[in-house]
Length: 128
Image (tube, rainbow, N blue to C red; front, side, top):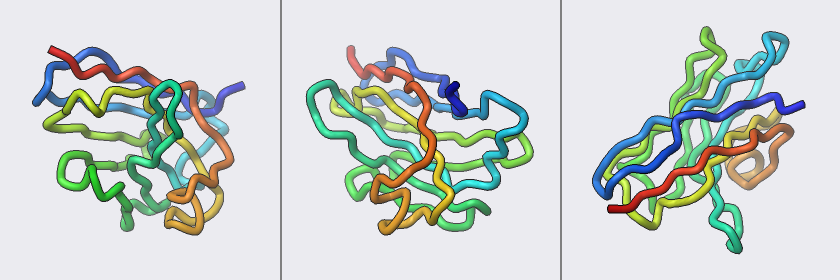
């Protein structure tokens, strides 16, 4: 059973904004125990990291190409992680996944693609 459930995807025009949410599907799964992150994938292409956040929320890592437009955050009291996406571009079109790692959020851990759980994903389409 999936431990993580994403929501908030959809169709948006270029320049628009979306906020994705990732929540635990069961109360017994505490997101606060994990480094969390967002990845995206276009069909036929490799998965790429979007952003990661440490357990406390104090440390965030972003893909260089997305800095300034995307913001990751978390509310451990609501057992939810968010991805705010602004000034969206057609090349941001992808399936966005959230992931959880028992390890660290940096390049040696979640940012490098090492995760323990992943959701089913939510489609984001940027088109006029």
